[in-house]
Length: 118
Ligand SMILES: [Zn+2]
Image (cartoon, rainbow, N blue to C red; front, side):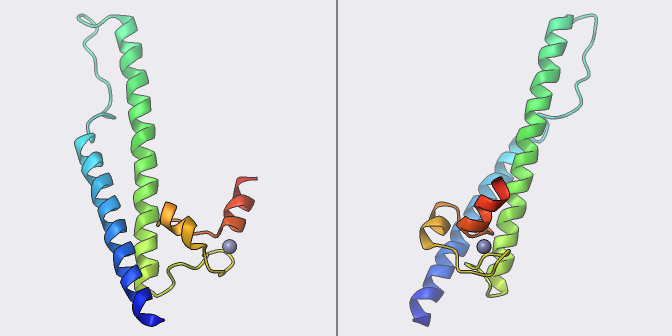
């Protein structure tokens, strides 16, 4: 039983690293999207300034979510290193395989995840 599990973990790890690399690539690509909007009032009207501020707020939110996701993936990678991957960080129960396949970075079993939402 140890052999297939070791292979699984290697595959999961590769997938997590891939997800992280992609998020970091996106973060790098969009790193200036949320820069402070500094508009020249003489060339930009009030409306376009509001548009720019709105776009900036959206970009910040996207960047923030990306950060959260990267941290989740890093935490999952740490759990792999600690040999704790696949177990719920809250209750210690095994996380359903299907759930991990859908979201390899998930730290909680379905029960605990549901508990958090309500
Ligand atoms: Zn749990």
